Length: 463
Ligand code: SAH
Ligand code: F3S
Image (cartoon, rainbow, N blue to C red; front, side):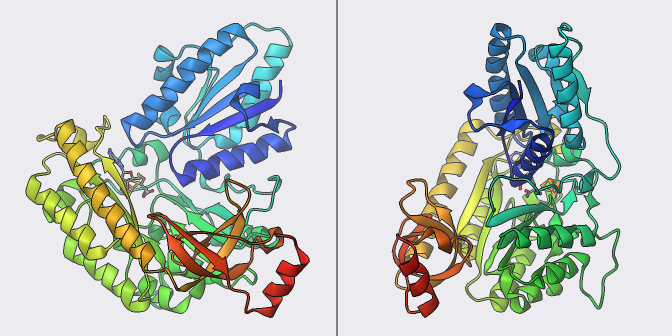
């Protein structure tokens, strides 16, 4: 009765929330199992950003409800954004769900499961579904427990903030994640130190709009924003090799942050910089507070700080009112920035958001075609950029064996995946890898063994 499987949809924030729920459940004596078929409790940690993500989770929950009819003790829970967005109305379509827990109540999941199981064990018939989607003060600080994960994580996610106060016209996140709230800087630094003491070498600082971190809680110091102050403090942790963050907002990229990429080598040469559209008209309709020219200026300032800077982005095609000319602006912006990677989304109507009611909704086949055009452009650009790395030596942080278990993977400073032969004991080390071959998204190469320390490491461990 205590085997739990958590299935996660959506973003890294959800991955991190699921990890935290798993850690809390382990501490309560639950077993987290990798196989959905072997669990007694199935928790779906859901995403609401696009309709397709919600439909996927609803489909899965419907399918699991059949299992529940065969085994009345089976417990099914829906957590996270869709739980928050739809609450008890989910029961209209999914009457068999036992637990619906919103985004500010993840820490209550162990208690609720204990209650449900105790009722089952006492033979008490199915009660009401537990629904908890209330707001909770201080919930930004409840996601922190990495303590009892099974393995050392070379790369770990650290939540620094919850919620978002922007009002991008297309976006449901402010509804599902609530007001922007930041964790105290000291807590974050302490968590990072703890992770490093247990073997973590890279942290990714997570939030919906990390560049706004702490703006209500900390003052600027000599023109340096609280977010950059946080980066400086995390950067100072000995033994930590790399710092990433996601997602920032273009409006947070002032001189202090661009300058940080010049001063703080652990940041590497990579930024995810969501643009959404290359057309000023559409940006305005989206309520994104920057122009195409300003965005390109930010890209230039980051390349001035670090010439090798690699960029990824988020783009929405088919926002209401997007014409061919607007789309052409997005296409040409992609060429101008020369992204390594982009997430392209077909605009999805989210009820309750301003864009849902806007005139000029774009037909699906037009969205499809614009999506295709961008994907093709980005694929070609990405391949050109990876191939330009063939013959170079890249600093790679070794994460562990790849899917085949035969080779190792890691990432370059520019956040490209690299695959190479190594030894298990090199996990967590920075190694030089000479790139010999490249596909659209992966670099292949060989360890450079000029370094005597590395040679000893490899000689001591069988490949
Ligand atoms: N600040 C968060 C935003 C979460 S939403 C982050 O960047 O991680 C992630 C991306 O989903 C957004 O950047 C946007 O490109 C896309 N998105 C959000 N709402 C959408 C919608 N209604 N339709 C299509 N894509 C959307
Ligand atoms: Fe969504 Fe815009 Fe915030 S994309 S998460 S409302 S910055």
